[in-house]
Amino acid sequence: MHQDLTIQKLRHPLKFRLLQVSRVQRLAGRMLRITLKGEDLAGFVSASFDDHIKLFFPAAGESQPAIPTVGESGITFPASQAKPAMRDYTPRRYDAAAGELDIDFVVHDGGVASDWAAQAQVGHYLGIGGPRGSRVVPTGFDWHWLIGDETALPAIARRLEELPADSVGTALILVDDETARLPLSRPAGVEIVWRHRDQQQNLLQAVAQMALPAGAGYVWAAGESGEMRALHKHLQQLGIDKDRMRVAGYWKSGDVGAHETIGE
View 1 (tube, one colour):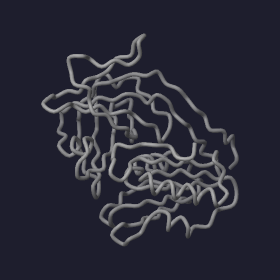
View 2: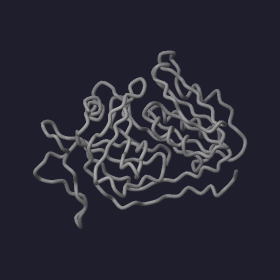
View 3: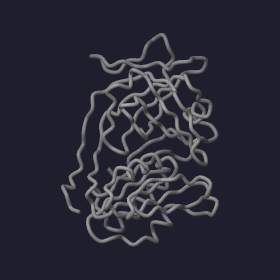
């Protein structure tokens, strides 16, 4: 393909929004999709498949989260409300015409985001902030590897939908078991490979069995921080340049709120 393969870094005006749940949909396994609507959603921008928005959750006993404002002194939360718990999430789908934003959640034991999503009902409130910027990865690479667990699925699914029809590559996804597989739209030349925890499979083992394709490629990976660090080391050993991969820890064992970019 070999179009311009320069990665663009964009900045967006920071805006905070108060939205309401309009739909709750169970997907597969532990995944829930929450659709949000509201007048504040107007003008929302998400230019890259792995953008992050900050979610603000209502404090205990409150129906709405405290929403900060941006002023000359920076970001300020209202003094009359408790500062909300915050987590980073991927915008799965934004439909400007319908005024809808989808966020996919992995439901697990404990965790403010998981607890909120598991109990979410139409009309419930959620605050969001950002994205503050986007890292736009070109689609013209000769091949694409997309690697991750359930927490990476929203970004992987979105990337698969955005890739040109003639794209080639592999999407390698780790889930609990076969019942957790999601139907994914993809270019015909991109293979979907599922791995399952109930069969003692993991991402590093699977990647170690893959042959590195010829040509200019790009690797994107996200999941548990410890697993991603090991995977990043393996990708380095394969000779993949740091500008041709992005590896991120979307959570850490014992700390589901952790988020880090590895190797930058």
